[in-house]
Length: 258
Length: 283
Image (cartoon, rainbow over all chains, first blue to last red; front, top):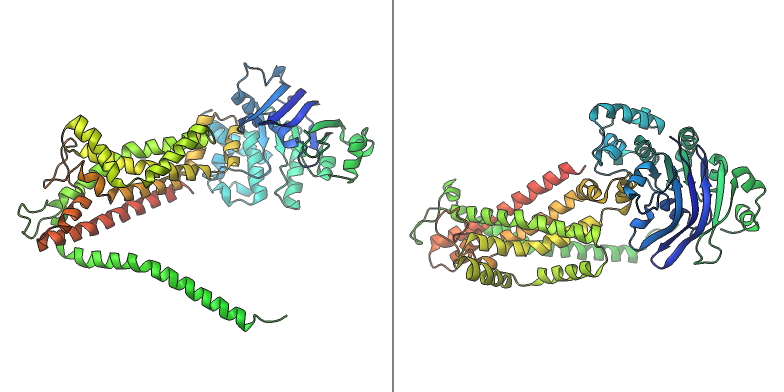
């Protein structure tokens, strides 16, 4: 199932403000690609362009090419809804549906779209929750409200929800930023496991996290305040953290700014 | 470490006393209305016949009930609610989900705000000039329901808009990111998330409409008889209270008090039921 992204010359705007400019990079299958950079460098904007969620904000638009499965997702003939079905997303803050149970949240991707018969759903639920490392904790209370879970559990539920529909790629936008260190470690372990089956794009402001879980790391930076984010460099994580090619990358990872 | 100084403690006490007094003062009119209505109204309710009988033909006679007005109020408010609550909620969905921030939405919001401030008698005159003068050429329950609906509409629109905009963007995005089309997201995620608030807003509008007299004076007019005919004049509790209050006959005055008590009870029951339903649906 794992797929890849080939991003070329991608720019995105919020109204008149250019947020990311001319970004080109590739996301390899079955790898974790981390996007790092200081606040305002456009990491989240970039990742929200990859499932065409960015354009839903009033006044927001994107230009460029993002090839998924040999097809440009920004092609006029492509329906954004079908892109979002193929590309799963986990957000910064856990956002389970507050009116739904744990069970219904897990299968929300099917229920909200009126897809698949009921017979298979039990199996899907168990598989998704197991993959998200949540099954043992919730199997006896699947009908409880999703909001009754802790923050870390809610985030794992959101991961289960995203992978239940078996996307080709999983986008994670700072999935641990609202979690405590223990819950963060669990999610990181989970990301390593999920890599076996999915291609993952991980936005993080935590460089240690990128160093721990990412195969490849991309460094984004908007040099002056108000500058759009640009790709400074991308490479194997080890190389980025030990022998970066660009002075600015070195400055950032050694903590001289950002 | 020092203890709280005597001066700060005294200030705390004084301010707290003022606050409690302010609350009690606000409760005085409410409590006195309730007590007065219950004491004066309960006397005219002789068992169930009050709810099943129309008033006696002779206004000076005792006995009889206000079944005509209870049925009228329920009929017209229900008719208005069925048409105008969905209209208000749909309008709010458009404003928050599909047109947020554009010129049309700002204009609609502004006019809804103005409409909530229009004296209800003007709404009555408007309904009169259209439905009574131009369409039916006589008074009718439909005209009454139309006038009540116009009172409810902006209230439903504005409260619904407020409630819908409180649904966090993150919840909408969660649904959209799963590849749910926008219309399904609104229908299956946004509306259920706001269900409790939408119900409360609608009940507020229903309660307000159920108590309106002025819009009905020129439209439904009132009737002495139990009637289900929508194209004919119909009674309503506020109309009976209004005419009873002007009456020289003690029995009719007492029936008006009982009508007021019934109206309060009716609104209370409706609100409680709606709250209960909303609480059950949104866990």
